[in-house]
Amino acid sequence: MAIVLGPHRYGKAETRLVHVTRDGDTHELIDLNVSIALSGDLTATHFTGDNSAVLPTDTMKNTVYAFAREHGVGQPEAFALRLGRHFVAGLPQIVTARVGIEAYGWERLGPHSFRRKGDFTRLCTVTVGADSAQVVSGLKDFVVLNTTASEFHGFARDRYTTLPETTDRILATEVDARWRHLSDTADWGESFEEAKDALVNAFVNTYSYSLQQTLFSMGTRVLESRPEIAEIRLALPNKHHYLVDLSPFDLENPGEVFLAGDRPYGLIEGTVTRDNPAVGPSADPEWYR
Ligand SMILES: O=c1[nH]c(=O)c2[nH]c(=O)[nH]c2[nH]1
Image 1 (spheres, rainbow, N blue to C red):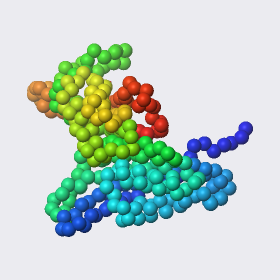
Image 2: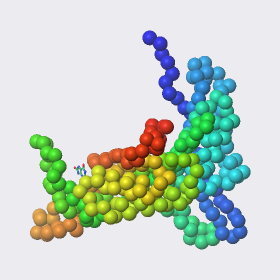
Image 3: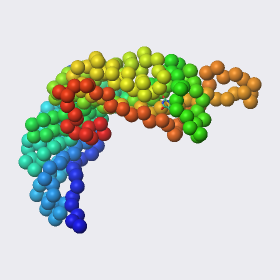
Image 4: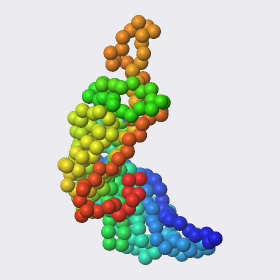
């Protein structure tokens, strides 16, 4: 039986780039984590160690820093597209460049002073081919909670089911959302802010009978309000909050005192898409990772 090389790619992961714009006394700060993965005709190095087609990953790291200086950084999607196109255009052996960026927020404290924001991480993944580019934007680490307006009952049961039905519970999750754009041009900053607002709006305003229902509502709200977005994938861990039994202390607990569970947790995942063939399936089935 022959042994063959399966799918493969290589690149520099997690290049940390901090960029300061010094136009006058008020500085701007951008803080990114850039991961590059190239794929194409890379068999020789795997079979024989012939590295003639292998641009060093060290060079990729250098390119991130040099591009930041030569062209500035701007929106993460635009920076990722510039990098991806550079590698595909410049290296005949490379067919696809995938550039993933995590962007960390900093809140201004003064003209040259900032405080790191920890409420979410902005994401993008750009996949550049010879004459196409797919742009996925998103966010993760975004924790939201409703103290009421959440019920869970009427669920299927078997002999192992013990969960009590509830008509009032805390609903909390840590949103991981990735949305695929229809085109590789957009106002990336505005699109991100509006998509995030749509997610928040739906979470706040949906009276929920399941986290699954909330997921669909969040995805729907994004697609309804943002025509430039083709589809969205959401991963929503159910951050369970358990009402503490205070009866041993002769105390009632009318939904005031909770234990915040850590693990295990329910994990609700789903894609919300447009029922429109023109939108097409995702060119890269791995786009949400
Ligand atoms: O919103 C929920 N969906 C579930 O599928 C589920 N399962 C569970 O135990 N609690 C919940 N809550």
